[in-house]
Length: 212
Length: 212
Image 1 (cartoon, chains in turn purple, brown):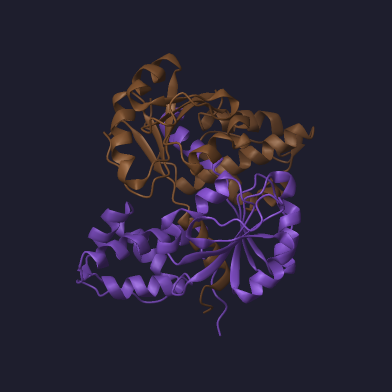
Image 2 (cartoon, each protein chain N blue to C red):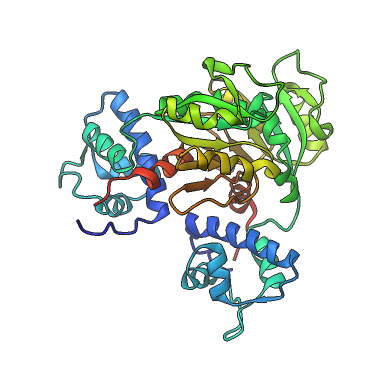
C-alpha cells in the first residue's frame, strides 16, 4: 500500500466544513451541486475544493458537479466519521457540563457515555442524558465496558497531566484537551489541544489588524 | 496606502501560536532564538514561519534568528492584540459561566466586563470576578459605558439571532458565536462561529482516517 501523503491541517478543517454543508444539502433533498455552488456555500473557491479532494481520490463529474449524498458519505469515510464514537468526560466543571449538554456533538456521532471526577461530592451524580459521574479509579474498567475511544479533559490546568495519565493507562488513544496547559502522552496517543483564546485572537485580527 | 494583501486564515492561526510560544520564551528570559528552534517548538518548519511573517514585513536577522521580545511585540501588533479588549457575555448557561471563569482569556487581554440574559431569575446576580448579569435591554447602555468591543453569544440556537440583533444595535462590531446556528449581521460586523464539533472531527481523522 502506498504511503498516505501528508494532508495539510487546513484541508482537513475544510473537509469538515464541506461535510456539514453537504449534510444540510442532503437534508434539503438536493441531489447534485455544481462545484461553483458548493464552493460559494462553503466560502472557498472551487479550485480549493477540487484540490482538497484530490488527496483522497476522484470525486465529481466534469460538467455536472458533485452527487451530494455520495460526496457526503465519501468525506465522512475519509475523515473516519462514518461510525459513532463513545466519549468520556474527565473533569466535571462548568465547561464539562456545557460540553455534555451540547446537542451538536450527539448529532455528529459523538456519544458522551460516562464522566469522571476526583471530587467525592460529585460521585454517583448524573449529568444530562443519564451520563453518570464515576471516580477516576473506575476509568479503566468503564472505558473497556463502554468501548470509550475518546476522552475530553476539562480539569483545571494543575490536574490535567494526572488525568491524562489515567486516560492513557485505560487504553484510550484520543484526547481533546480543554485544560489550558500542555500534556505529555506516548507517541501512539493523539492529543488535540483546544485553545479558545485563538478564536478571540482571530476575531480581533479581522476587526483591528493594522492596515498596510 | 497599498491594499493589504489577503492573509490566509491558516497563517493567522499560526501567528497566534508563534505569539504564545514567544510569550513563554520571553517569560523564561530567552532573548534570541534561531528560526529552526522556534519552528521546532511551534511544530512547523522554519520556511513556514519565514513565509508567514513576510505578509507583514521584515523580521529576524540572517544567521542570528529572531529577537524574542521584539518579534513577540511585532506579532501582537500585527494581530491587533497590543491592547486589552472589553468583552460581554450574552447568554448565561454552563458554557457562558465556563468561559467567564477561563483564566486564559484575561491573561491574553480579554476582559469580561458584563453579562446579559433574558431570564429574570438571573438578573442582578454576579458571576466570578464581579461580572454582573444585566437584562438584554441594558446591553446598549452598558456597552457604551464599559467600552465593550466584543460580544460572545452562548445562548441556545433558537435565541442566537435575537441576541445578535441586540448586540449589533448596541454598536458592537465583533461577535464570537458559540450557539450552534448561523446568525445574520450587517457587513461591517465580524462574526466568528466557534464549532467545537470540528475539534472532535479533526481528532478522529488523525486517529482513524482511512490509510491509503
